[in-house]
Image 1 (cartoon, rainbow, N blue to C red):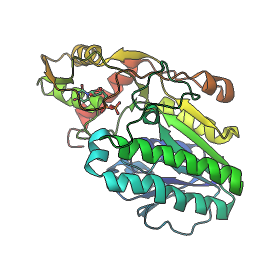
Image 2 (cartoon, helix red, strand yellow; image 1 turned 60 degrees about the vertical axis):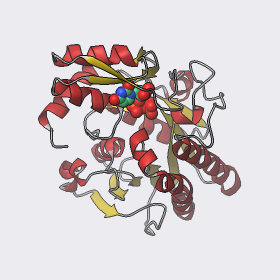
Image 3 (tube, rainbow, N blue to C red; image 1 turned 180 degrees about the vertical axis):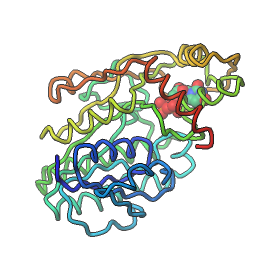
Image 4 (cartoon, protein in one colour; image 1 turned 60 degrees about the horizontal axis):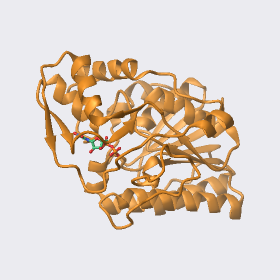
Length: 313
Ligand code: UDP
């Protein structure tokens, strides 16, 4: 991808900013487009000095600038349950109008378009682990539907731009990801638990903590996104780490890693909170030759270190 001009929508967010950095390292010209609603300009300082980097503020669901580009990564959407439930209409518009605007730009430029989708499209899955062939179990009018359904629509729109207009497209179904630059107040489980542990306060486990998630370190995910972009594979691909654990064990692990004196407290499980989630990544392994390489302890240590040294973020 060297020398290519790549637009990263949502490039000031947690995953987007790591992706911008990696693309610059690969000698791409990077245009970061972000509304800064959930993304932060502080995520970009080391990049803003680099000559191949440009930042444009804007909202994909309103208007995207008419740019000359070779590729688009679309990561523009609120992604944490707290963020998207606070902004349900913006979330629905970014997954529909926003994706349409970017697909039109890709079509005009003959550019490759990668849509960030999510494990949330499987809803509260009845099949475990989740393969790409599973259609999901989504409540279309539940509290998570603004995110789940907008991403399902985004997948449908992307697929049809590919088949109907011959736009070259990719779809990444991203499972739970963690790492430096998550917002401490984004409400997701890893920042919540790490911040609570660093303050020696109680870790708030929702439900009895027996629900599971599988956490992927952000650097691994970014490598997966790049491999997918380069692959030529147009159907959806799961990207995540199959290392599944309960939320209760995750809380205990974070207490022990931080050396915290925190205890665990329990709060009600939010409605429609998926009970189990683990990606089947055999397709990514077969088509992209990709698998995550960062163990949970190693990834968590660097995440904790980041929260320790950036308490204001
Ligand atoms: N969770 C929790 N305590 C928190 C935040 C989240 O027990 O302070 C649980 C949440 O109910 C869910 C899991 O952790 O079962 C992962 O939540 P998160 O918001 O990180 O992402 P999700 O996978 O639900 O989108």
